[in-house]
Length: 274
Length: 190
Image (cartoon, rainbow over all chains, first blue to last red; front, side, top):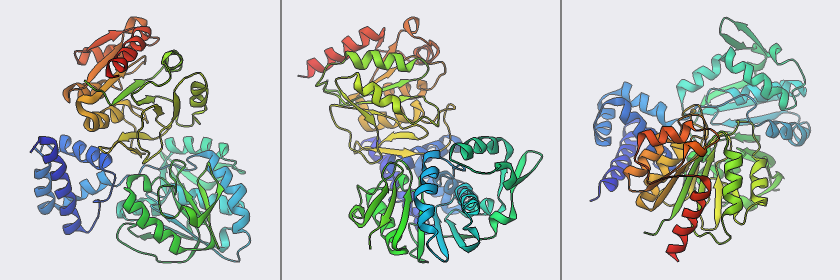
């Protein structure tokens, strides 16, 4: 067997081992991505090959935990993609205003920057007091950080620009308190966010919601898995509910394209058909 | 040798270089081309449309899960890494910056090398950093060929110079000669 086939097989066995031992399922993730993350870890680990990684994760939980962090991408920003947030204000907020109470699901919220962005918009639009935001991720470490709501001041400088470009109406610095190198998000933004551990790959529907945001999460999944997750989203949304994907993600390659209308084609905002 | 894809990494000075190449390549060019051009994270990539207007080829942003087809030129979206799967489709990620860049040339080149092996042509053009060096090295290791823009003809010489220092390039050429070589390679295929 050629060496490339051996390493593909080794990776597949490693993913199986992670699933069976720890319950995290990366078997239907995009292969080039998984391959790159595992090879990076291999280079840092001093181990000889992927089989040795497999053997090590079975015995060494700290190492396994480190590998799980490698495979779970938590890179995120506040108000990433300013045109999306502009469209959210223009096209989605007016729909949300028609509901007496609002439930929003941030699926794959990582360290929480997008959930806080949403809380800010809702507060400015006078909707936050009747909203519950379920912000979920399978990465508990990321969730813990999200809950703390502490971000570096260096990043906040970037977010101020993002916020302004996305149509922010207030002074962004009023939403947090700075001390030394960090900024702590205001308690008033945190109060209606429920942080919960939920794995899109292995868990199912947990609530009926008016709006789902799942941005730059599905890019890591293969077609089969994207379809599975889209089914969960479709089942979770009320009729007329809104689905927001990342600006480079779509429904076209899934079974669910026909089940939504496009509210904003370019910003990938979809409305579930009645 | 039948080449199946061309990958291009380019940074500062790239807009002029790409405009030159894609105004010159003829319609019906028979190998798909995949490009990482460093741009600001907030770029809306409108420049791709302008480049497309000047070209005989179909130049577009790469979409995730999109199948790579002949006749197309794909450009990495801003603020995402672009990866190529073994089944010749694209994946996008937003992992950390690599070489201070997202998209990073190394990330795209390394995945392209794995996917296309010795059927790949890697090209490093003008740029003022060293992104692309690790990637072009990987392309050579897996049997692909490396074309580097002659640093003396590059608007920013560092990136091609860095690649030349790390590998034995198959060709070190001006943009004009690179276009001629690509046309020749595709004609030999026919």
